[in-house]
Image (tube, rainbow, N blue to C red):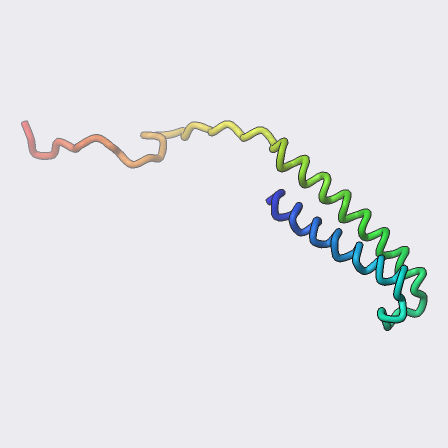
Length: 91
């Protein structure tokens, strides 16, 4: 799960970097914004959040949580199929 999140964050980081560069250098190609300066600041903010998510995801990829110990089944035969051969009808 962390690897998928890291990949998504990396792609989002690259995309928002491209958007912020376009808003900085050639805002006339980016239409539909009332204020390109505010849009650029929002892109930088979202890029920072993607970077933070990427760093945390990479931390979780390389330092996974401790695996939970397996609990033993409680009850007759441990709720498992009987693996012994039955001796029905034999003496």
